[in-house]
Length: 310
Ligand code: NAD
Ligand code: UDP
Image (cartoon, rainbow, N blue to C red; front, side, top):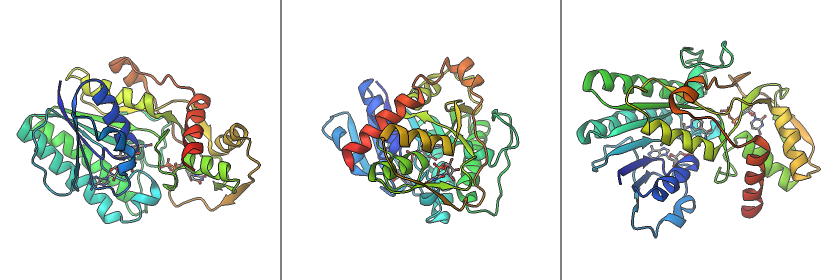
C-alpha cells in the first residue's frame, strides 16, 4: 500500500484516478482548490478511511508525507484556463516547483499530467514525442501550453539536478463521465446541446481533427506509466489514435442521442489546432498500453452520464 497524493483530485480525471487507486488499496490524499473541480466528483469517496481531502492551492507550498505524486492540478478546458491566464501559468509553473520540491524532500516518485498542447498547432502528424512543437507564445492558449512546457522543463531539471524519479504523460483529448457540463470542451458541449435540443456549436468549418480517449483507458495509462521501470522517463503520449473531424463528432452525437438539434457555425477560436492525433508507439512498447474503449461505446457511457445529471 502506497501513500499517493493526487493534485487536482476533485477534477474530471483526478476523481477517476482517486477512485482507481483506492480500489487498488492505496491511501489517497486528494488536494484541490476547487477552481474547476467539485466536491460532488469525490463525494462518494469521503466515507472511505483511506481517502483524505484537502483544500489547497498548489501555487503555495505543501508539507505532507507521500510515496507517489500525480500532479494533475490545472484547469484543462480553454475557457477555464483562459479565464485567469496568469493563475494558469502560476499553477503549472509554481505548482510544479512546489510539487517537485515535495517529491525531492519525501523522495516520492512524481508524474506530471502534461498535454498534447505542448505540440501547439502541429506541423508533424501524428505527433511523436520527439516533435518539439509549434506554440504561439503570444496567443491566448499560451498560458496553458507554455506553462505545461515549462513544467516539463522543470521536471527534467529536477531529475538531472536532484536525481528525482519522474514521469511525464502527454495527455490527448480525453472524455467521459464527470466532465463539467459547462466547461466548453467539445464532447461535453455537443452532448449537452444535443440533449437539450440546442444548436450544436461548430467552431470554424468543423474540419479540424481531434482524437478522443475514454477516461478509463487514460487512467489505466497513467497508472502503467507511474509503475513502469525507471528507464521510462521520457514523455509518453497517452491518447486514442482514432482521429475524427469535429463535424463527424457532432454528426455521431446527434445520431446517438436522436436529437433534432441543428448545427450552428461559430468563429474558430484563435490558435485552435487544425489537427491532432497521438502516435502511441512508445506507450504500446514501453507500457504495453493502448486504448480499449471504442468511441461509440465511450460516447454512450458519457451520454448516459449527462442524461442522469441534466
Ligand atoms: P479539470 O479542470 O476537471 O481538473 C483540474 C483540477 O485541478 C480541478 O479539480 C481544479 O479545481 C484543480 N486545480 C486547478 N488549479 C489548481 C490549483 N492551483 N491548486 C489546486 N488545484 C487546482 O481537468 P481534467 O480534464 O481533469 O485535467 C486534469 C489534468 O490533466 C490537467 O493538468 C490537464 O492539463 C491535464 N490534461 C487533461 C486533458 C483532458 O482531455 N482531460 C488533456 C490533456 C491534459
Ligand atoms: N469545438 C467546437 N465546438 C464547441 C467546442 C469546441 O467546434 O462547442 C472545437 C474546438 O474549436 C476544437 C475542438 O472542438 O477545435 C476541441 O475543442 P476542446 O475545447 O474540447 O479541446 P482542445 O481545443 O483543447 O483540443
